[in-house]
Image 1 (cartoon, rainbow, N blue to C red):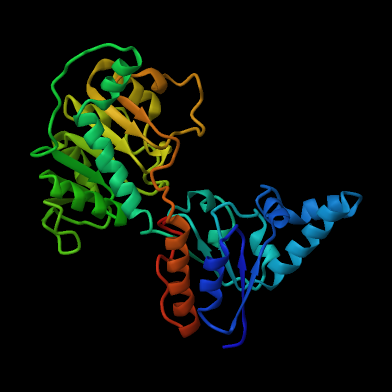
Image 2 (cartoon, rainbow, N blue to C red):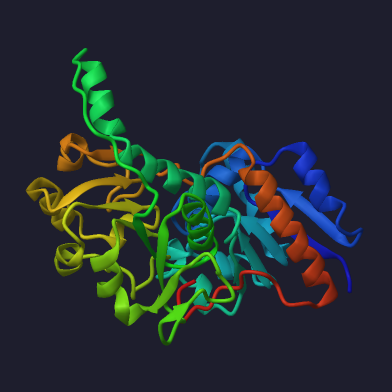
Length: 353
């Protein structure tokens, strides 16, 4: 194989950059400058912006734009966030493989990249540890009454209450990818009964070989059963046309009285208005939400003031080790690419993940 031009469209620590370069001497690695990254993530066609800058913009900015276009034109492999130029397939005619640092590709679903024939791979799997811990922390917080305890603390009010246990409760996991399996493993360690739904499952299966921590794996059609039996429902599915609005009024009504919802998927998976109604009515006892239909969550959203609700700003997958794990995955895929082996986490454009 001849030299392979790899372009990195994000900031990266020097030691991680060296790990990439050390994979193989055939790699020619270029890292976009800060100015180039700002143009790259600008949200509009780069050729249009280039013409504007060439017609009299700041000389440094015009030079950065020209350099960016030249670098992309030679790229065979691109490491990037899911925020890409809308005209990327035209700008990078030699691009064969795009590695994302995200697990989801919902930002690309309506764009040309997935229709271009470029192989797209994700960072699916690197979020399992931080999000698994987040979900267990969320369920513990609700079971132990931390939201009301924190509210009472702010008011300097002494309000004794009776906490619950996770042990013996049922958790229903919607989506059994790497995150769902890690949640199942941790929940079982706490003595919980574990149900899960998975798109590829065709019939109910006890203790499936790929996830023995799951007591019962159900097909997607059995979602109502999972919702009816679970004390905690955890959403861990990718956002696709199939999962958009998956949890609406009917599904929330199907959840058992006093159940709790934890959403670490995408905000659009849930009908937010219906969720507010279910929480206000008391049908649901609480929720922990890390994702929302509109982010940042608007200040006038009713979710801010609901009792028994914890909100976090889309940080469940965050960890100081995020980029380390993303680069480890990228390096493994680079070795596979150079040796002609199948890549990990290849996106199926038809499924949307």
